[in-house]
Image (cartoon, rainbow over all chains, first blue to last red; front, side):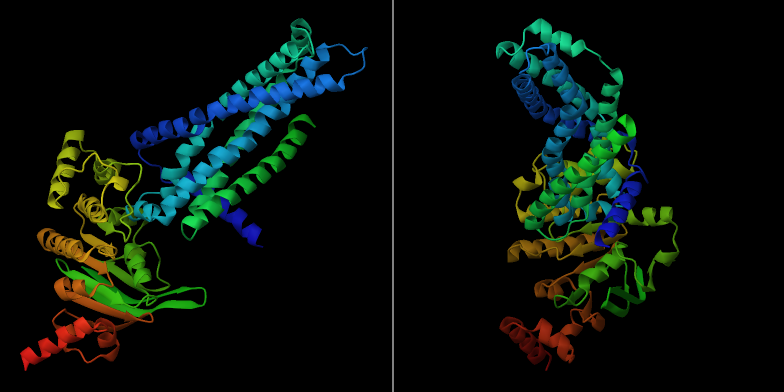
Length: 245
Length: 255
């Protein structure tokens, strides 16, 4: 019952976010600020993680392809499929739920604790629109980050394969081009848009409706990370079934 | 002027406000006092429109709040200024940005007009060299002054303050009290202050409402509070030895 109530409250919150918009002149500044914080600021960790994940996937694939009859190009093929279908959109989203989600929950939660949200409401401002809408718009650029993650992940795989001596560059690249289905990229980008919306709204919900003091802000950040990850994993299953099943 | 007519407010089984009726006059400093848990904050939040009373009405210059449309309520909110207990300044903005915020949101004034208004109100609250500093870089007393400047920048008709001098040293607390009182008279604002501070009661309480367990127990001025025989009020206001002596001296002088 408690969970149903929370789900209902979440959807009401999402509805409220789009009501009574803030002046565009103000909103524009907020959106650019959030793009800087939530997308541009996260690029470093996205690139770092993607590079090494791509490398690890390649090494593990290579170590498991022990049959000499299997061509080395399969290493590139497996790395491409793993990175594009799962690692870039889903794994990066989970990492972002930790980095960006915690930031969102703690910043909104602190504003709640210090009555800054009440101050906005007293002024007659739709605080949900003012605080959450720019975050949603900013994370809609997230598919670009995922696209970069795909590229860097595959690059990491190529570096691991070639410099680790697991496959020659030509074979790896041949594998990358083998049976390429562009729809898989579309599928990954669709997933990343949905996950981005979750990353912006679920932590906002936990921050906005939190009660208590500084300790509760920390607890809300942890809870928000757990629930954002759970929702992403469930939606990943549903979207995979719908789009690829 | 704000008229409150028999308002009730409950949270679940907890009946917090139990039929409060009163009137807050224009140009006067009105104080709400009472022990913790007496319903002061809930009452103030009802006046601000943050809580909708379960029963009863609140009239702002004769307009019943519950009968206003969403747009009219929004417009009314813009006529209200609020000073929060912890100042509630926006951390990410400078002092100047905080004070300019309502002007940015609700007016179409040019940048120079807004800047002139911000300079004027900051000067009015005696803050002339803190424009570019962030809330974390200024003292508690200065934060309160910025909060007052932000509250009055839109020329409000109603000013609400939730414990404006809590956490301040006695001298700064008196300065803040006097500043609010002067602004109330100067701009003919209806000011309602929620306070625990007995210095404020004695100094600026042109009208005082004492709440006890969600009821209005007593109502009067800072002169009348010396004379009252209401035990609940005297127990609360004169709980310290100092105030007991002050009251004794006042009664002796009168006799």
